[in-house]
Image (spheres, protein in one colour):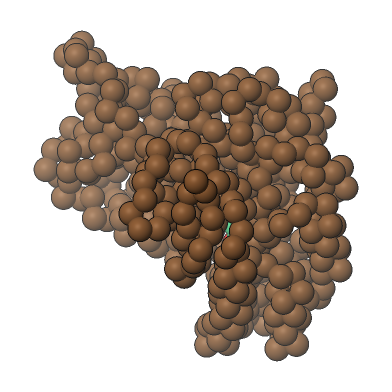
Length: 427
Ligand code: 5AD
Ligand code: SF4
């Protein structure tokens, strides 16, 4: 039996898909990259913006024929959009077997057990089947995603996540450490710790907070690199900055979403920090960690945003000196406070502001990439020619030079292709 997984949205979703995939692998499935060969397809959806939801559902729509060709096949739709729309989704796509909302991911093993009992005869199908084909994700095998918390206690007024993922729950530190050890044994060199507001983590015993967790993960033998996604500025205290600076395994790239540079808009977004506080964190990070790369998220066209508010965002992007940014048009999500605010911004203005933010961040990103030429960077190779530096640049070897996937080596950076760095192994 073969499983094909498709994940939309953030890394949390990718990690959840892997977790659900492991459940199915534990029940005798192997992975396939080709939907046509699959006996089960798992789609993990995103609803953070309308566009993300539309993309996921249009993909579900394309699977009607696959399912009708063999009704014994199993089609699972999981994740945030599944949580938000549940019955509507089932009505719109009656051929979907299982809808598993983001809040039920922890119960996925029991939910899927029932469905599998109905669909597959274990004695017959399990003979000689073993998941020995790999999961088709070898390219990322050296980097393991480890979820440390789920949900969010914030109520940013534009955000649907607290509705679909619920309040924060923290995974016990012992379970996290055990998973990290397992992943390292399987070949991971880099660990990506994941949570909606990853640095609000609360542990137990010696591991009180996220900083303590970072230090403990760094002590595990074989962990060469640690990353985390996404921290919230509110929890970015001095202890965390000191920990990052004192823990060499932690990579010198931080993704720290700011959303807006206007204090008035930040307040309306209920972000719980000011532009001054945000820029103070950036400045402290730069002082503590040499050559740190910082990226961010920007929302353009939040309700009531004026030209002046948006100019303040553009100024903040400039002052922040970001290496890159994800920029989004505000997307009103049903049920959120921001969707009901008066003063919604028209599409054209949103698009125009988005274009300005994109132009500036892309230009800054290109210049930052150019400035890397002449440096030597350690690259962890995901394939025999491509890998990532500690500051999260994709690096490609020049002139067809090849190396061994999974190893880490210093590279002389000699050029730039868009934002990818090109280089040669240091001989
Ligand atoms: N509209 C636009 N962007 C949004 N994001 C979250 N909700 C919305 C929304 N309603 C963006 C934020 C967040 C990223 C994951 O998605 O920038 O950091
Ligand atoms: Fe959404 Fe805000 Fe929570 Fe991030 S912190 S998931 S933007 S509510």
